[in-house]
Picture 1 (cartoon, helix red, strand yellow):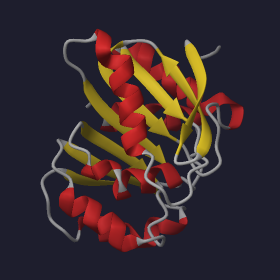
Picture 2 (picture 1 turned 90 degrees about the vertical axis):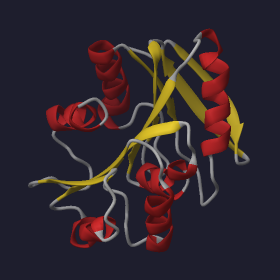
Picture 3 (picture 1 turned 180 degrees about the vertical axis):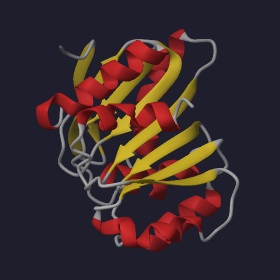
Length: 196
């Protein structure tokens, strides 16, 4: 199992790996946790990418995550635009895990091209004001925050619903830790959030 395309690219002065699974004009951008590569533990991100592609036909673009506090979204959207030149029209969804979830709430929420965001176990104790600002500025269809009941941020999860907005959703995964180690549950996260 491998990505259809794989290449290196410089984003925010960091060399990142980009992997692409070719599909239709629904493009899912995945950013995993801090210092995680394209594959993740036991190929979990490749498996997630293949699952999304085979079940929904979507194109999946994943970036490794060496990002510090810089905003990689504009440069990743540039890569998406170049890839999507073959489509007359396309839509972009975002799937972020841990630090990738924080990147989503801090930066992707401001990008009007990203219609849906799924943010899993983002560390809410890191710059919570940026998460709140992202929630307030999000104009897309839906932003879903998911936390495992055993994740350290679980006790702060209600913060994301303090600002009542119709396009913000909070989901709690019972008996799940930060890593969502159950592979079946991990692979189903996009089913219950991006594509429902």
